Length: 160
Image (cartoon, rainbow, N blue to C red; front, top):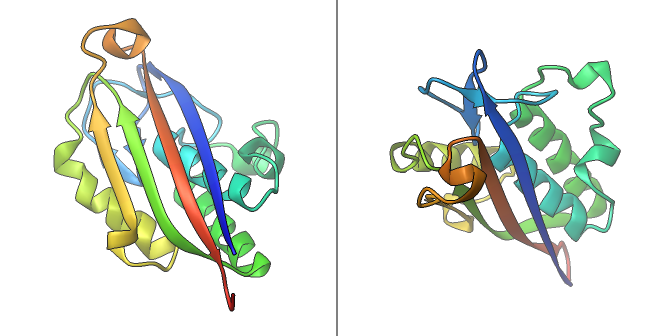
């Protein structure tokens, strides 16, 4: 049995925060605002996996009202999501994600992001695709006010 999940996440760019995407700290003058490290890419991946299993959304499992998640690395949240997957008997078929931001350039960091995700989800790097696009100066992405990420995942039920 295969299950598909999809998600989109959006965070505002603000001063005095680190920019972390896919578990990679990217040098930039601003970072993403959020309760955790605000890793918009990992949030989209996490929620697409949770959705594929039919277990709600990221807020149900990691609420931004819970002090345990204040400032937490989203890599840890991804590890918890992997444990949920394992408990439910699922493995990754593939993940396809996109980051939408005007700047900074994502290309130099994408391979490390893919490696980080593949390692935590115990899958081959070829099963994780991450790409990026600009806002072409349109909307809040183009004005450098925020970053959006979207993810689609295919899960396979073990033993079927």
